Amino acid sequence: QVWMGGEELILTPKEYALLSRLMLKAGSPVHREIL
Image (tube, rainbow, N blue to C red):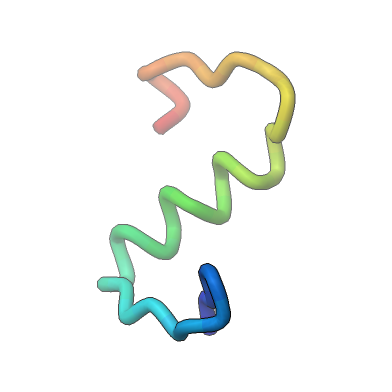
């Protein structure tokens, strides 16, 4: 589940996977090839 501003966001599996990768690398640049 993903929440923003107190509301649940409905993400596709692809969107969720992308968000997960970005969160793991929070504060660091992520190269396009990794995504």
